[in-house]
Each structure stands twice: as C-alpha cells, then as structure tokens.
Length: 428
Image 1 (cartoon, rainbow, N blue to C red):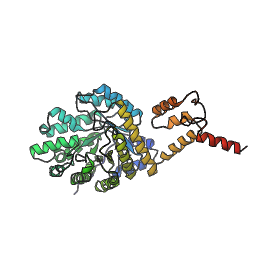
Image 2: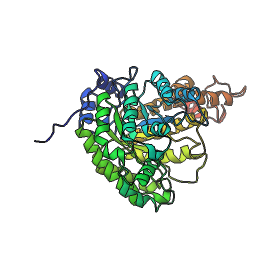
Image 3: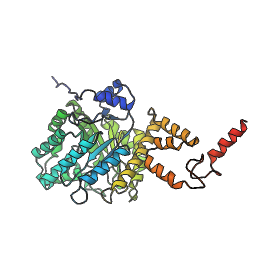
Image 4: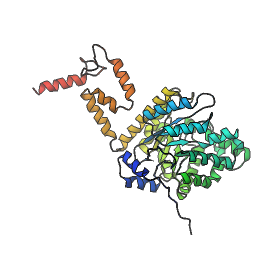
C-alpha cells in the first residue's frame, strides 16, 4: 500500500492573512497551495511574519539578497540595506552571508523583517567546514536544522546538480557560476560520490516539514553567460528538479524552483514554459534573467528587462539584481536602484497578466498627474523619495511647485495645462 501523501501544516491564520494581503479569497490561496502551484514561506518560528503567497496566480513578488561578508560588510551595514529594501517594497529577503557571525546576521534579519526570510545553508556549511570536501552529512543536517529552528522561512538547496551532470558543465564558456553549485561540484569531484543534497533529500525534507520551511530548489547549473544558455547542463538539472518537486510534495514540503541566469531575450518565454511543464507548475523563481553579458554597472537594467518577460510568462518570484552585479558587494544605493528596477518589472508583468488592482494604480496616478495633484502622485509612485527629490529640484521661481503645470515643460509649454485651459474656455 503506497505511503500517505503528507501536507504542509501552517500556523493558524497565516493563509487567511496572505489571502487578505492579496485581495483574494482564502479558498483560492488554499487551492493553489494544495496543487503546489503556490508556496507560502512561513516558518512556524518566524513570529513577526506577515505571510506572502508566491505563485503565478497572484501578484509577482521580488526577493532581495543581502548578507555579511568576511572582507567587506558586517551586520550593521546589512541591516541598513534591509531597511532600504523593505522601504522600497521587497516581498522577501535572502541572507547570503558568507562571513562574520552568520547566525547573528540571521537573528538581526528575523527580528527586523516581517517578510519571508530565506537562506542558502551551504554557505554556512562551508564557513564551518573550511573547504567543500570536508562537508559531512551530519553538518548538512545540523546547519539546516539550526537555521530552521531560528525561523528561516525558505532555503535554497542545490539538490538537482548530479555527478553525471558535471561533464556537461565542463564544456561551458563560464563553467559553474552558482556558488552553491560550485561548492557541491567540488565535493563530488573530490569524493566521486553523488551530491549529498540529493541522496539526503528525504532527510532534508523531514527537517523542513518540522518547521514548515519551504524549499527553493536551486539551479546550481544556471547559465552564467548567453553562450551557455539552454545547454545540456541547465536542462539536465531542471529535469532532476522536476523529480524533486514531486518528492517534496509527497513529503509535505512546499517547493519552488529557481531558474536562470543569463538568457537571450528571445529564449526567456521558452525557459519559463519548459520549467512550468517539467517542474509540474511549481512556482518559478528567477535570477533576472540577464539578457546581455556586457551591461557591467547596469545589470539591474539588463536583468529587469528579462525579469519583466519572465514574469509575463508566469515566473512568480524575481530575484533582484543590482547595478554592481559581477563587480562587487552592493551598497545601499545599489540596493535601492535594484529593488525599484525589479518592482517596475514585476508591476509591468502584473498589468500584462491582468492581476486585479495592478492597472488601477497606474490609472489613478495618471488622473493625479492630469490634475497636477503632486502629493497623490508621490503616494502612488514606486519610489516616492526619488520622485519628490527630482520634483523639488526641478521647481524654480519661474516654475513653482504649487503651480498647475508640469515641472519639465513649465507653465507656457505644459501640454496638459494648455489642453485643460482650452477645454475650460470651450465650455464657457
């Protein structure tokens, strides 16, 4: 007789809270969760959490990566970035800390963050072990349990990268660009054994179910260049991730799937559609994707272009990329620029997909613009602080802030002012 399929167990009221935030019925959220087409990252120990549902049937969400580094940043700097990300509308935060006091950084995040918090546990495993080949099954489970007990809502585990896939990655232009993927590839090459995150997947799921931690099945073989997009390595791992989605669901663990990387613009729809089919409609979580490799210093723009297309096709969670991607650890301004770029991408996709309430916000702002209601325009803007600053800088004695005209054209050449005046005179 087959084993009974388990179901995730949510803390009381969290599904209802997520439905209210989304302006949909509880029944709709429950249905999407039951089908595995949505996840609700909500660790039972994350006390101050305001639940967020992630799935293609709901508004597209964005995640922001922060985290301490042994050489560049401590928890105080990352706490500032956290606040900026939240102020700009981040729907989830991932702690990618690789140095310093990693448990302390998580503690600070969880205490100050009401949105879901995610991690990549293998980073702390490596920090403790010292080198990839020293990872052990016990260390893997210990770190996952400790992070789950602390309150982490979702974790990236690179369980789909198998020993047999490495030969495909060896032929790439940029090899393996995922840090987690590279760490586990190093372990497999050294020991000539299968990925422990794959062989121990059921044990990992047992820990996650205990605390209701969602799994984000990592793409350790995501393409790091356009030249490697859509190769055997990427899609071999994707097939394995599809298998793991079904295993996680059977074990009562929520699962979403991480996606590429660097993808030419015309290939983005195909990638989302293929992932949706292979991974049984599990929510797709994409890093960008970046649609060109040459936008150094402007990768937030390159990736937001790809993200908008991906979200239009059904990607449910977008991982924010900052201008400093490929160049260094982002500072506070980079976080702001990256988050706003991705909020634009997500909102544009919501409009295209007909998400309730998305277009209404744009229409309301347009009405405020036509009536020169600057206060209301700022309230509706994605980044009010920047809009207010730019507006104030443009104002002058000849073009005062309170006058009914746009601050770019001035009173004499403002098209809306001229049109409104002509209409008013015609009615006399």
